[in-house]
Image 1: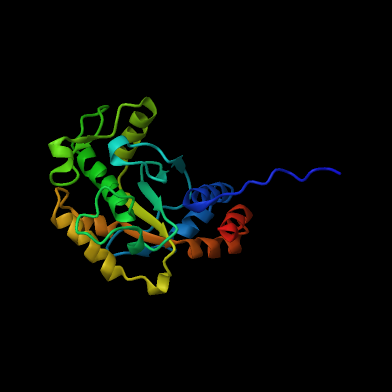
Image 2: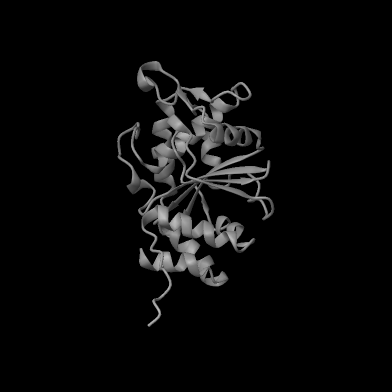
Length: 233
């Protein structure tokens, strides 16, 4: 009897993110179709629509050293960079309720680190690591650094050359029941007590995409790999 082909089981948010990216790689329009379903945390924010499909590079879990490792970075040429962080829970459920919400794996903390990276990156010397404080009193005043790994240095150069940056959280929230006001309040407490003051800019670029929304796109576009992982989790 011939054995069945190897079956790959994808677990948790990392498995789902990988399955999602593998699926959209085979369908040029699927990535944008998913992104267009994302909920903007601040209503009426005046930012452009998501970029169309075209030149897209995807980096899976690149290390930005002390600014954290995003689950993925989507680069639409020089037009737009999207930092992706995913959880198998709601946005607010991923973190603590303390004002700082720091030094944890909450979606707010992780995306806040990427925003700090971008803010400090605008002042960085070309070819040098991005450095800067993230929180007041952060690590006893020592600046965080994006590191000197050759692969990361090349990625940092690309990230700092794009015209627009967005932050995408993928969650188990129900889109129509999402409490965007509570998300904004949680983010406000972090910004008012720390060095990175560009709160409005961050909120304008913060989006939440639900796993269910991705699954809806996957069913419509027959993204079997993602759907298999989604059903298993």
